[in-house]
Image 1 (cartoon, rainbow, N blue to C red):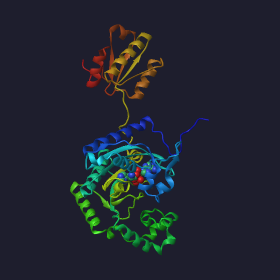
Image 2 (tube, helix red, strand yellow):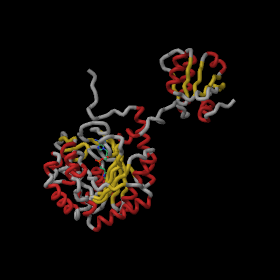
Image 3 (cartoon, rainbow, N blue to C red):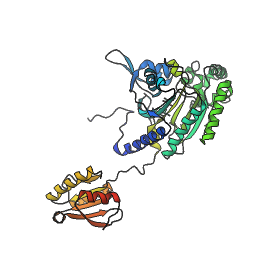
Length: 420
Ligand code: HAM
């Protein structure tokens, strides 16, 4: 029996890869316009890094990590997200000494042992950014504006930006207490997960999808009404800068993130088109994480977008590959000449397809149609003796004779018109 891949781990086949390349190239272009530089970090890190950053009591750390002990008895984990490794590298290489503000972006596979479904996989890919060193809300607004700019460039205007503030280590404990008090009498209606998280993280009940939790949290105190003066001002200024940048957003006071490191601004870009996997990108501020991981007391903010989810939202149109030229031939010497021409044309940057299997002329032309080649050239004994052949532009049907000279053919194919 043939072996298959692992559940939740996808092959990305050539047709699909073109969309991925488009997403990746657009992200690079947009992020670099905003002064971000790429960083590449390993897919494996010490397990402790994720436990200390994402949080021991989160779903990711409790249930979803691919962790194992390697042959040297080290506890290591396939990264479930990108922030922890990037911040670890930032601290380890003292990037704050190079510049007091680090603006970094990254892309690559992440791994979470979740139940696979459309838009949710066990190996998935993120493109993310992290800014270390600035607490000013201008940066919050810039990062969000850049995220929306990326989506506009990629041609997706449907996902909506939702923002919230989760407060800081001064005001959140008090809010958590208030929310716990509110939920105490409603504990029976909460789902098992939220019951379990009631002590450690009661906020999760606010965005839980279970009917019981939805009902139990109606009328719950809002985090936004319980921010300290500093967080309240930070959120107000963030909104002001978003308005100034022309970035459209909604406020969602129930948005709670599944990772523990967040403080103040948090956000998600949500779509209606992917069922329950509605977040195509998400992130927020983490003003204590860098210090907690042993680095300088630097604030930080970032986001990651899910590449699979973005690709699912893209149309199929416009990603097809059209070779410039298909050369059909009949006869052995014409086959040799075709091969010689193809090799030279490819070195001149022209994409050329031929038949490798000695098929009939008719079947070669069917293949040219299938490839949707822009031009075709047919070479037989006559053409060889003349040193010229008919070059046909497939979209217009225009045909004219060209010398079997690679430079000349390349010129015509690139120029897009057949000159007499
Ligand atoms: P996250 O919300 O866990 O945040 O993931 C960010 C995005 O990754 C999600 O919005 C989603 O598009 C995608 N994603 C997550 N899990 C899966 C999955 N199993 N299958 C497919 N796509 C998935 C983070 O990871 C944070 N590190 C973001 C961040 C960066 N915060 C600050 N800086």
